[in-house]
Amino acid sequence: MASERAILAALDANLQLAVRVLSAEHPSLDDDSDEEPEPPQLALAASIRILAESLHELITGYRLIAEQALGDADPDDDF
Image (tube, rainbow, N blue to C red):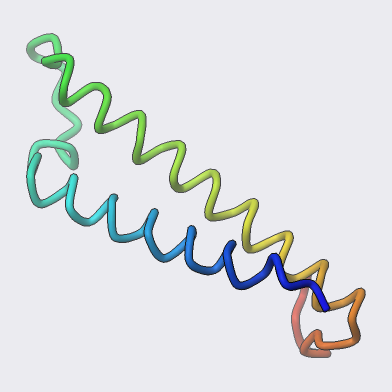
């Protein structure tokens, strides 16, 4: 049941890995300074990070709903 959960878990893990690699490659991603315009590569890396975080939240929500529908949910989950 809900075999899509496996590929979504793999996608989520790969997104987290991509964000870590981008952060390592572009340490200034965590800087909040607005002194100079961002180079295009850094701006795109920041966008990827934002979208990866949003997709992570969606995948987590889907997983929780799927677990509830299948009766696999943890009764202590607040979702």
